[in-house]
Length: 470
Image (tube, rainbow, N blue to C red; front, side, top):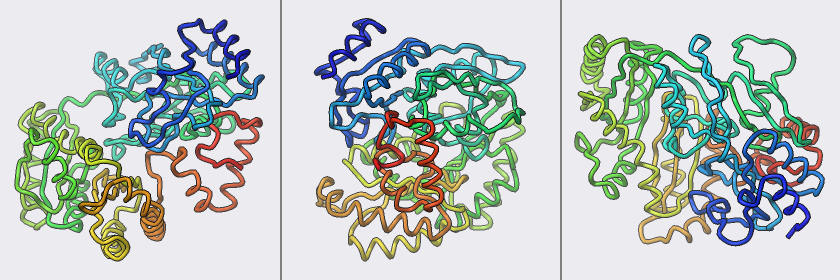
């Protein structure tokens, strides 16, 4: 216990916002229950000046800091390790929407602002903030940016990086970089914003951001289609792109076994047609529902005539659209109810997806007979969640202990061989730090380590995440 530091922190933030001792499990455990650490303390600053002061105190005492937003990450990047020496810096009190400029289509928010609160604020002005995630009711903007979150509308609007125009960041020295620009064009030196987006709190602590907004579509249409194989799915994607171009805002896929998990754990969610090898969810943004429904119906009819879809339905209203989305969003929740599983967040060229899946079917059957792939994700941007569930009657814990390393190697080897990546949208965190060190080129790793040393010479910002301990 670092009593002098804790006393200084209490003097700075007040007794109520420096938490120590027992009862910190919500901050020390990730939402999957996979990472459980022990914090020296949890601090909850109210503003950027307090964040900077906390960082300066920690630097003086050589105490590592783990920044934490909504603690919804999937790679162990936002919880402390087991040493009891790391300070968790929660940004949960910094929730303000500082400014919304409707003419400039920008909004400036603090890092602890919950994504759904930002979406609602934009909607109240007739605007759209298009980042959409299953955890949007609890994840925060700072964490979204720190991990460069993706979600279901990357196909049209891009990742969190593409939605960010400017940042406010507290550096490892406890200084504040004021970079909250709302400009679309600003070529004045190195792009510091992109350095911090995706850095997972290892280079600086994001405290606020200026983000892009968009005009809110007058209408949104959602359809579900059944496909016989992955080649038909890709043919349907090709057809939808040709017919709708930028109006196609979502193209999600769910394989049969994944929907079976949803049916088992969430039987109240109605599945519109009998099981199919692949189910596709499409979303369109339109000027009016009437003008879009006919072209969408015609496109699905063409898909059926070309054997790209065996069945399809278009949501009749917003309630039905929500029900269709719930089928897709319930997949990870259903998996969680089945117990721990091996998660993969891979990215591939869309054209390489069929070959990857065929290769993995053969590889997995030989490596672990009976292993059950749970495949779903954002096919429109090539991001698959290729998760693996234990064979029947094998306990999940034993499955991970015996097979996780080998199956990670199989999946990641295949993804990279097909021109892909082993981390598309979840980040690196602690889970994949060794994988990054093993698979990134020596040149890339040397540059990353040089940046880390330059911006965090004491190595106190989220140590062991992204880059493993040297």
